[in-house]
Length: 232
Image 1 (cartoon, helix red, strand yellow):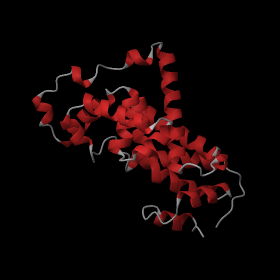
Image 2 (image 1 turned 180 degrees about the vertical axis):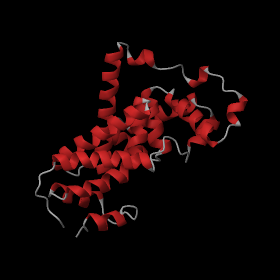
Image 3 (image 1 turned 45 degrees about the vertical axis):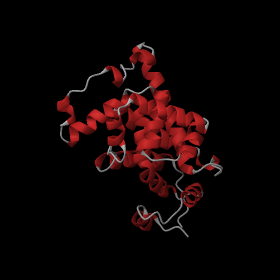
Image 4 (image 1 turned 135 degrees about the horizontal axis):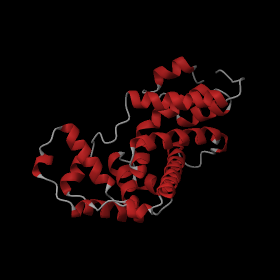
């Protein structure tokens, strides 16, 4: 049996409770346990959303909306795909919706707003000797410069180290397409950049930012949840 919220908090990072069990408990009325899922996937989803919208504040907005949409639709989750796959699809849809809205407001085509790829840029040697903070920002800019299809695959495959199969299932493309997009991304980026990306703390989502998003999502859940909730 799943513990109450206080006990669940102690087991978040031990992964003692499966996604399926948490989802079932939330659907039955224990809405507070949705926080387990939010904290479990905050970092992964923020990276995916951030690479699409290319703005920290808009990424947070899209992520919050994605979580709320997922919570509302949680009863429709049938477990055919992993929860992480289902949730990532929702986050990607919300990020793309926000990007389209922004393009309409600005009155420009999204493709025209993309910057020149990194192969057309010259990075000074001084950048390569920068401290960790500058190096991370430099790496983030280079990844942002990739075309969207390559950018998403690169983030999921290299930064989040998801399998080719999982990436294909999440994006709804073939495994061969995943490999092609990843190859093209690697080709656009230098070998040095690819090496730096592995295990890099790109678009971190720990600490205050994680707490802020989690708090906002749970406030929205509590405001919308029925007053009668099952306590396990």
